[in-house]
Length: 316
View (tube, rainbow, N blue to C red):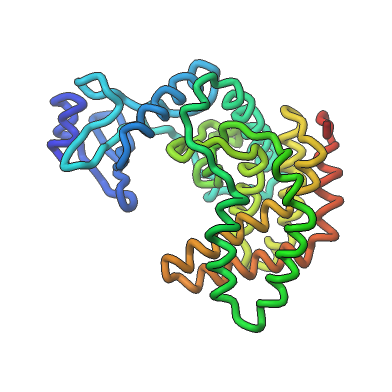
């Protein structure tokens, strides 16, 4: 670790490093705190470095990459690349009750402002494309289908028909731009009830704008799904999240229409991912979430469409 840290200057060699999870450490250097992460691709690091600088200049609450003494935003050691961020203070969203109306709306409005900034970034073409529909069709669907028992096969087939009928053509018309792609509660920081930071931009890609909104929605449900009381509050969270978003950025009619179908794709992708990891417990949880949302479809659809037209925003 010392050989890595001293590339940011000799003073960093004495920093105390505490592992947070695989490939992530928290560093303490005097009164300063940093987050160190391991990466495998220097090209992606350059893209993130330039983007974070631009987002900071445009008022986004992010943490910029720190350059080493060699004036590059990474340290290289034994074939790996390490990046360093100043620590952003705040309480992660997964430690708060995001079902609280004001927090849900803040998350939505913050995402809309971030989307506006990302859409204006002139170097967006440098980022790879992320096609959720193609990823599910070629990978997630066959994986989940091969796992499903007779008990689930009819439900999955019904979902496949619904997705084919309602999403295939509209998907191509959805607004596409740079998206965060990992916009979950743990990457949102709050201070004194206000959103104060957005973390982890290493997964930014070009994709459908709606993905981030749907991803946060299903991430919140995943965190509370086993609590029946909180699960029943989830539709209200989605409503307030969308209302917060459209106070800043209007949604298109197509986006409101396919909102639930995009969530279905996300749930299928997560199910397949956990199956590949050998974690059938989490795969089954994500299947259960998928079917539960589908059971609420007729109730959720008008709620989402109404929220998309509400409070200061309008579907265009």
